Image (tube, rainbow, N blue to C red):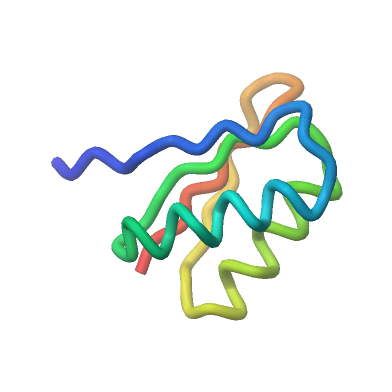
Length: 71
């Protein structure tokens, strides 16, 4: 099973989560996991990933979300 890198964007305001996700996907184009703790970051990362051809699955983990971005 392939282990995907995890990007922690908790506590960061937009556009930082999107910028970090973009940099991570440039390094790991097969996919990454992104942790987010606010709806704006979650929605912006999801939108960015989908616009760039990634499938996005969001897993709620209490107050946080894990976005699984996959090609």
